[in-house]
Image 1 (tube, rainbow, N blue to C red):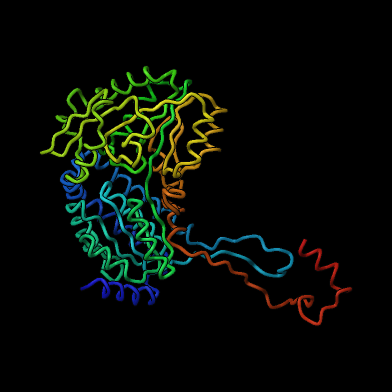
Image 2 (cartoon, rainbow, N blue to C red):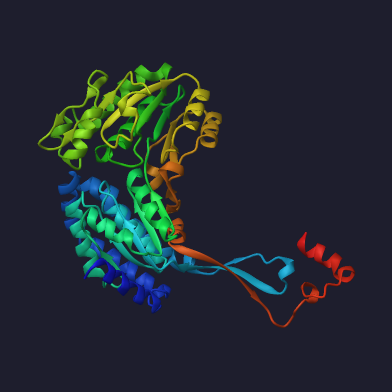
Length: 457
């Protein structure tokens, strides 16, 4: 069956109303949950093959988070789908006003290779909860995980409800030529622009989860040992191939040397003195990205790590010092285990610089100064972030996750995900037993003028 036929089948299925009952959505979410549990071993084997992820990291960062999101949606979908009553103005007397969330219809979910299972199935859970049909397109750069996803979804659902399309650029192009009701894309800014060009042609709404150079600020009041520990965790998780990883560190010049020492100590503590021999340390996804990262690894500014193994596509955690804003490593999102460290003197200079840079997906601040924390959170524009930690803001279904500006548009997770895959209808249910005459012509200005002003003030 080709892509057009799959989509036509899903259109017919959606129009039948089969996906609308909340009872059906809950049943499908439970089926998905059971499927993920059943395929856990196969998923982990695939993640290890594609990215070298250990069992623990694979569960912590992929299957565990997916199961948590599905469980959250099962628990809350009835409340999310219920009518949301709102206040009715006096001018609409007598009536009831409410918002009703309806599924958008036939949706396309395009996912990346760095967290190939999480970033495919998590938005799918939101789409199912909202009552849509879905075609998912996992990345060709993570082929083992893509095959497992296709097998899992094929076993759980008929293709008229949820279908997986595997392949590369040809399949991506074919999908984008089709008319969907909604497109959810996670990936690079370059591909995101292409997705948006295609969706603009058919006025199709889209959510774009992109990336960018996410800064990590460390000021003079920070607890440096803890800051270094959490920075190393966030930066080198999945070998730095995380969209919300701290891309670079901006530390106050007064704490630079102390922070560098702590970061290097933490790398040894967490990954060992020979990280490339650590069985829990992963690899770069493919040779193309390995060579790109090697080109960014300025050996003249390397102060720690950076060993490479071309056969295993591994790069040891690397720390660069003496980096300037003009260096090659600062011209693009790194997306790898290379950590540049820059310094600043005054926050005003940071605010000025950030105002001229693309808005990042995340921002992290390590500080004990409450006034400064409030100032940074208010003045800097970014998708989301943490104070005195990294990455963990995305590991909750209670808050939406997404970018802003160049780092994306729209959000998902939990209720935000349900809303992203829904259209909110605003409805007024007007009663018939009373009909105020003042809105109808002929207007009686003297008689109704005061009442109208009272109603509409």
